[in-house]
Image 1 (cartoon, helix red, strand yellow):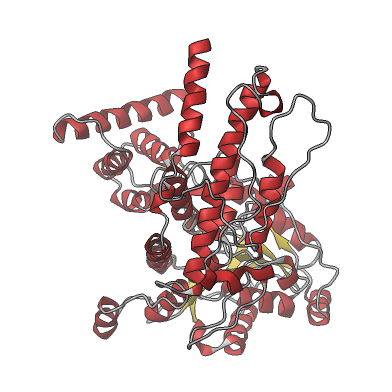
Image 2 (cartoon, rainbow, N blue to C red; image 1 turned 135 degrees about the vertical axis):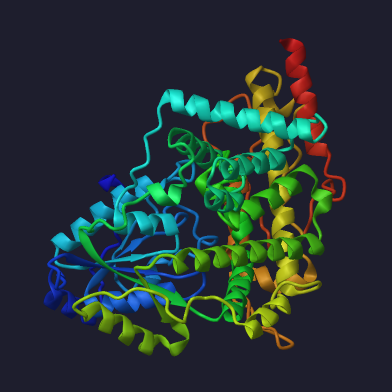
Length: 547
C-alpha cells in the first residue's frame, strides 16, 4: 500500500529543521538497528505540538497513526492539522482515502512501513504520531500471526453469531433483537469463547460487524486462545529500534481539554462536515470506519434524526449532542490510558512539564544508547484523592448552554441542513418524474419543486456568529468563538442540487442560498416537518402502481 502514502510538501521547512535534517542522516542505535520515534498519548494531550517540535529538532517527517485522519474531508471531527499549521514538515497518511473506504490495521502497517522506509532512505527521521493502539502495536512488533480467514471459517463465524443472536432472543422471550441487542449478544459470545479482553474492546465499537466476525473467526480457529496471546511475538527482535513515548496529563485536566475541544469542533462546523462528507455520500452512521468514529457517529445519528423529524430540533438537543460526544471522547481517553499502560515499550512523559521540558526529555531519550520503556509511577492509575475528584467531575460547558450564541448558531446550522435535506429529496423526486415525461417544466406531474427561498432563518442572537464567518469576541466572561464560514458554504450545496425540472437544460442555473439574509421559507415548518416525507412517499406509491 505504498501508493497510499501522501506527504505534504517540505519545501517550506524551517531553517532549523533543514539544518537538523542535513546533520542527522539515518539514525542508528547502539544495537545497530535503525531508530524510529513513536509518539502517542490520549486524545487532547498535546501530541501535535510535540511532534512538530520533534520534527524541527531532528529533521523528521511525520507518519500519522490516526484511524480517522487518513480520510479526505474528515477534518474537524478528527482534529486534523491544517496544511498551513504544519510548519513545512511533511506529513504522511493524511487525506489518502475516501470515507467510503475502510482502513484496517494491516493496511496501516503496510502503508506506514513503506513511508518509514522512504523517509529513512532520504536520511530523515520517521516520527509516527497517533493514538490508535493497534496501529502502533503492529508498527512496532510486526503483523500478527493470527490464522487467515477462509470462506469456510468466515461462514462458521457468521453461523455461530446467528446462533448467539437466536439464543439471546429466546432468552428474552422470543422477540427479535434490536441492533444494540444483537451487538451485545455478539460481544457476549466473544467473552464466552474465552477472550473477555477483546469483548471489552469491542463493546466500545458498536456495530463494527467486520471486526466482531473476524474476532469470532479467529477464536473458533484457535480454540478460544485470547487474541492478546497470539497477535504478536513481542519477545522476538524487531527490525526497528522504536523509541516509543506516551504523553500524559492528570485525568481531570485531560477531561477538561477534551470537553473544550468537542465544543470547538461542534462550533467549528462538525455537523456540516458530517452531512457533506458522510451522509450526502450515502454513508450512514456506524457503517464505515469514518462514520463509526467518535464525533461523526453522534453527529450522524443526530442529523439522521433531524431529517426524519425536524420537530426535534431545539437548543436542548444541540446541547445533548455536545455532551454525548464529550462523554464518548472521555471514555476513549480512559481506554487509551488502560491500553498503553500495558505496552511496556512506551516511556511515559509528563506533558504538564511544559513544551520545552517535554521536548528536552524526548530528545535526551532519543539520543540514549538504549531505550527504556515503562510508565513507572506515572501509570495513569488514580490515587484515592483523584478517584474522589473524578467522582465529582462535572462537565463545564463554555460555549454550549441554553441561550448561548454557539448553541443558537449550531441550531440554525442544523435547521439549514434539515431543510436542505428535504429539498434534495424533492429534487430527486422531481428528476424521477421528469425522466418519465411527467415533470417537464414542473408541470402536470404534480412534482413541481417549490420556489427556492433566498434565505434560512438564523436566530437573532446568532447573527453575529455567522455574519461573513467573522470571529466573534467573547462577552459576559465567555471566551471568543471560532468563525463559522461553513454556514455560508451551504449556499453552494443548494445551488448545485436544487434545480426545477426542465424538458431541456444545457447549463445549470443554480440559485444561491444566502444563510445570512435571515429569512425563513414561509412554507417550511420545522415543528411539523412532514411535507417532504409525504411528497416522497406519494412518489414511491405512484411508482409502485406503474410497476
